[in-house]
Image 1 (cartoon, one colour):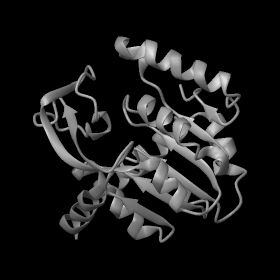
Image 2 (cartoon, rainbow, N blue to C red; image 1 turned 180 degrees about the vertical axis):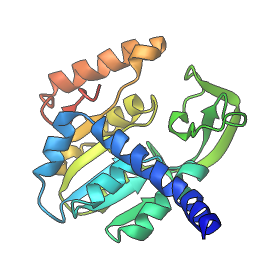
Image 3 (cartoon, rainbow, N blue to C red; image 1 turned 30 degrees about the horizontal axis):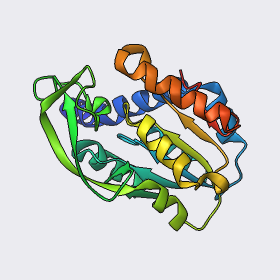
Length: 223
């Protein structure tokens, strides 16, 4: 009996750990983001770009929203599919939201092959990101994200973007494409604080958004 209890406890440990990781991640989300999500009506269409293992997608799905989740990394997208199994309102796209259809290198964390930690959240389409290894990468499919948004033929209440530096190119692409009329809000995490070469491109993008009077639509206050 004791052995069975110990065995059952060990088997539940991954579930318990995942639960606390999820709760911790959600508590760490910006209050403005959580408040905005709480005010969305059921079945509102939302898009999670850079979904990783699915913490934010799960948060959105639990509020009965229609969730489109993008994650190109092999390990992370496998975890994300587990979220989609639990929530039928989540659709997983194991591709990168890009500026054109094709393929690209997804560069992995420098300690990806040696650490026991989950470092998939650090993966980037950009080889000069400080904590990735330009010699260790996966080939992933990319799609024209602006074309995807147009293909939805629906009002999109929210897009969350966390793609480790590529957000600059992607948002500029969305601005160029003129596809933002049916997008209500974009929350984006930028990475210039720990990535000096991203400071000027990020500043230029923020200035462009300001000049286009889109500061209420595109929010950069993730951190």
